[in-house]
Length: 638
Image (cartoon, rainbow, N blue to C red; front, top):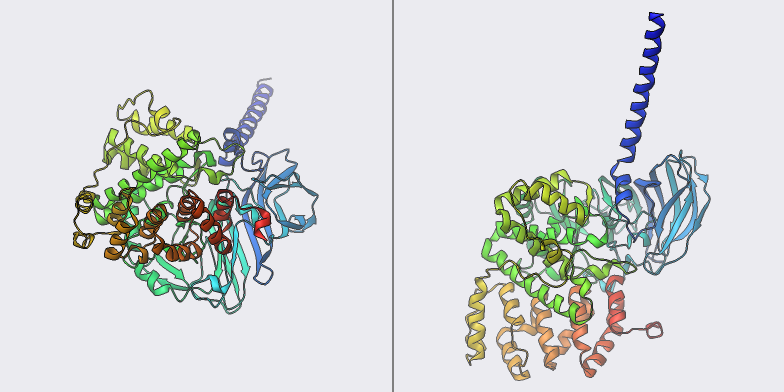
């Protein structure tokens, strides 16, 4: 009897252990980052249902066809599925689906295209089973794919070969790859891309440093990334190393200038690592794109896309490079879970960028950047308030039913920066640096929501340091509209000398007699921004003759000067303005200048006349905003 009891107890114990093991395994499965995020966060800008099936790896095989301006490709998606999964949802926009197969054996799949939405595109719904591990989607991109810009040779620096580049942020990856296009879903990828043999292909992955005669390039990204960081560039490119881990790609006509401009890149990388920990992406290279690129830079992992407008010849605009480098931690490493939390990417990055610039050039230099940022923020908030868009002055956004690009304003960048600077002031820089370094380490390759960050902040910075913040802090800074009353003060002492010279000019000192020899582009920008609004055309002419603003090679200075030229109808600047708007595609410059032109009837006519010829040179990201601003209708496009 005793033996029977012992046997029964043993059997029960085995069942108990098996049950615990099963429960533990199930719990672990449910608590993978993808499943946890799906339960806790709903990303309204994706059709994906990661709690049912989530993409873990993409193997992309593509052929780039410049004649047809299309990419023919197959996306082989390795997926993880829940126990009762029946469908895989992918995001697409404009893709022409040829066929879908399942598994390595390529069994034909049943699929359907859902309803089209102007913002989010069309879901591709594929029937699967819990045993499905791979889905293969054969497709072709549309000629007007929003992420892709196909450039004729005349639109490039060398003017002898065509060029293609992508811009996937925020939700444009779906227009060239069928993926789960959400910042909260990460996957690794490999790729094989065929291009004309005279061109080079690059991606946000391990890249070649020389052209391949075959025109076939292979890529691998071992670290998991969200879809908005998928990137491709194809053109007549060459590479110049800058350090052991850094280098720059550009067209042959620009490579020497680019290598000079970014010569301090290795030093920047080392400064960043000293602040917030090791760089986790192996190499950090840049590519200088043609001028139609819509942003200053795009932080594609391992290969930052950069605008040629930062090639000033004096390394004065390289804070943009520091910004994109900082994204390797804030954004690429720890990512906003949804585009409503966009400030978590950009506010942290601006803070990090200015700390890098301070480490390299000193605090007075970094404070100039902070002051210029504050000026941008104040103007943006005033404009949004005046347009009845008060809700867009909050850090935590509500982009329901809207394109997430509408959240890309100075608020996310600069208000986010000043909030972090406010927190630094509460605990001191040393403790705040320690907090940020651990933040990046503990949350590496994960996503973050605003609410999760608040909790993390309280548990890892405020409580350990016995800091009790005011009850309205989060409502003032994160959920509130406008600017908080307790904005940190900026001590831009180098601008004091600029203000004195500006005042002297106002009081009658000739412009040519002002003491400006040691000024950087930031001091010139401060000078121009603070010119009186009621200047006459004669006074503008005096400044132009003394300092050559209309012919400036610095895009930031030039764009600021054009704002005054437009306001005072200073016609000597108009030919340069027309050339600038026809050759530069950076939205940061385009939107204010076109908007300023439309404030008068004559300016509006000029804006639309310029736009007719300039529009083909702009990427969709810029065109989408400018069409609305200028009321550019379909019938006008023909």
